[in-house]
Length: 414
Image (cartoon, rainbow, N blue to C red; front, side, top):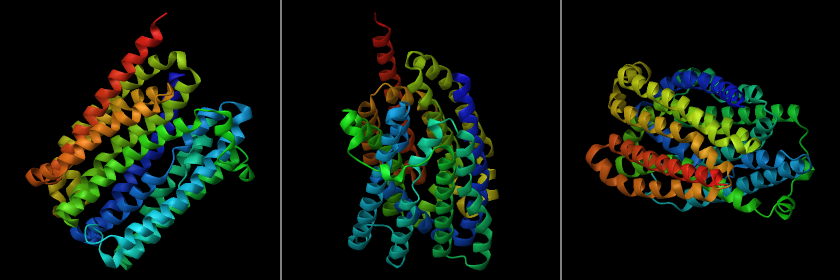
């Protein structure tokens, strides 16, 4: 079972490894074509779309895995997930339109780019792929998911230098990013349909909760936790733009992009481990411990890589204008390594049905980090923002450890 979790993580990381390498290719094209200020504005637009999706989307893949294990509930679980995705698209579109239309200068996105931002956000909403992801993971088709996942970076990298040469503008890069999202979503749905027939007529938001009285609690807990995890990262980027301007956002994003590889590994570890913990709850603690040991070694290696090769990577990829990203890169790598160490513990807590507890374990540190952000930025700039992220990650993972240990002691009692 542990071998299967590691194999599944390996498939996911093969795609994420491709994504990590190719992301450096299109990062180099975008930073050099748009410059410090332009790249920062592009990041703010992209971040806004991610923020809207993070606020309005549901972790439907976890619901499919939880109830799809039972053959009789599988169709209803997929129908429930599809209905939640439809809610996301409608609510997200309305929210994006209202915010962009009514927001004043406090939103750090230039007025001239707000319509483009809205259109890009709508595309991003229609490209959500949590439901097909859940179908693939339910059937252990991680290889197919890896192929689909790699589509985003392949499309971006293939078009980035053409855009940089022929149309080095923010709208052109947004169009390329939008095409990449749609292509990835299409590939995910194609792979899911090859794995399991998708009964579109089964879309229903009522049937599954009628049969499973804790369905809404589970959906709320997992979705709020994911929302907090996504939104906290993107909200910090928007706040950096509001307090420090687009140039500082560009520096922070370069550090975040290079250091984000470890965080992607954490997400892969969480997603590959969670199905195994649901299938074999009596061995859950053992699996989580072994996966955490693997994560600690990987995280430490990533921090050392950032420390000794970070400055060279920044110069080679983004150029000398972004050298101030070095220290934020090291701090964000440490934050990502911390999240990686806690990924299996978080999966264990969610698998035990403590999704709401998991949400609050992330909520409190996030509030503290956001509250401290203006002061830290005033003193240390982008490095201060990275320190806020690191502090939140440390507090969160410590909470995971305490709750996981308590749950284990309760399970061990006769």
